[in-house]
Every structure is written in structure tokens, then in C-alpha cells.
Length: 296
Image 1: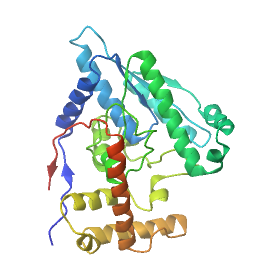
Image 2: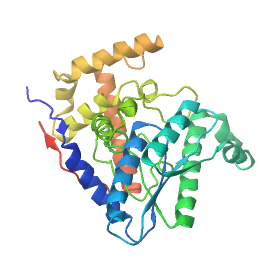
Image 3: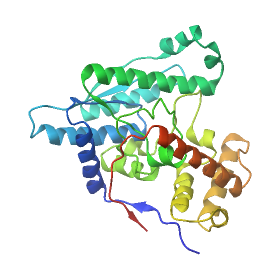
Image 4: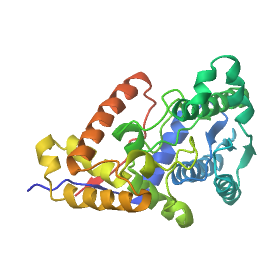
């Protein structure tokens, strides 16, 4: 059976390619602003951006600055903000912390139903954060730098369209989560590379708990789709079956319940989410860094 090929990269080369992309798309501005959560995606983007800005600033009079904004709410783990501060201090960038609960709760006056449902409230929090970042960018003359990776944004559309999806550029939009972790370690953030992914929009939320599978599964299935594998081939594929079954067992052991009962259920869910990702990308489609990857 034909294997599903996964991407490999030269971290130094890709870091430079992404850095050049960031510089090109901040041209004419004073730098960039971004949400800094302490997670591996925002950490990697911050490190890549700071590295690119430092290189640019050595040879140019108009200096570029990166600013990280930590915008926690009551549902966020306090360790997330601590990790964000750690990243900012290690990189030597300016940062601000602003709790968004008061802004979110003010929506009781316009649409109280939004706050009665965790899903809608979570999307509202993401939209509030985006609004803050865009106003900061506008008043500082900077660009909003996105932190979405390939699996989340273009694999299954796991983001808020007018929240974390509303950015001026997508530096790691061609990197699957697996390679984002590899890049984070290369950039000196090994301790955060394997942090458990969470959107931070609902109490005790993790991406694995919410989705029912990891980004390794997302990458494998969506790469299979992109490489022309048919649905029946994927649900019976020798790479897919053991990985998905392993994760189904892990989910049941961790949460004492099953979100999906079979490989076919998981593949169906990813197919549906992948269709949604394509629809969302047609509504908001920020430029994505072109990078050199080898598939094997």
C-alpha cells in the first residue's frame, strides 16, 4: 500500500524563509503585535519574528518592534500567562497583560445568550482578543501577526473566524503542529515544545479533549487527502488504523468515555472539518509563508 508522506524540514532554512516573509509583510509598518499565550504556536511565531526583526534592525534605520499581548480571562490557567511572560522576557520583547473578563461580560447588555453557552462565549473571547490586537496594531502602526498552524487553520479549521483567524499574516500556516514543535525546540524553547495544546476558551479545555484526537492524526489524514488518497483507502490504511486506535484508547482512559467509536468515525469528522476549513479560508485568507519542505 502506498504510504502517506509527511513533511520534513531544515529548521534553519525554514526559520529564515519565515523570517523573510514576516519582514516583507511588515514593510512600511513599525513592527508587529501578537497574542502571546505561552503555547507552542505563539512562542514559535514570537521567536521567529524577533529573530527576523533583529536581523532587519541591524541594517536599517527604521527599527521594527514586536510586542506581545497576554489577554487572559477567568477560564485561563494562570500558568499560561506565566509562560507567556517567560517567553517575552527570554526574547527581550515588550509585553502587556490585560484581563478581558470585563469586556466579555459587558456583552450582557447586547446579547446575554452569548454568555450562557461556553461555545459562544469562547468564540466571543477570541473575537475580543482580536479586536484588542487590531486596535493596538492600529495605534502603534504595526501589523497583527497570526499564530495559527497548518493543522488547526487549514487542516480542520479549528479557530474563530473573526477572532484568532483575523490577522494580517500567517507565518506558520504551512507548518503542521509536529514541525512547529520541532521549530520551537530549534529556537530554544524545548520546555514549551510539548505543552498540551489548548485554545483557552472554555474551562478545563484541551484540544485533544475537544476534538477527540491529536494533531498527528489531523496531519496524517489531511496529508492523505492532499496526496489523493480516497476515503476507503484512508479508513483502511496501515498508517491510519494503529494511530487512531491508539488515540481512541488513550481518550477513553483519560476521560472515561469515548468521543468516537471507530477509525471511520474519526476520519469522517476530519473530512467534515476539512471542508469547513476550506470554507473559512475563502472568507479570511491571510498570506501564508512559503517554505521549503521535503515529503517522504
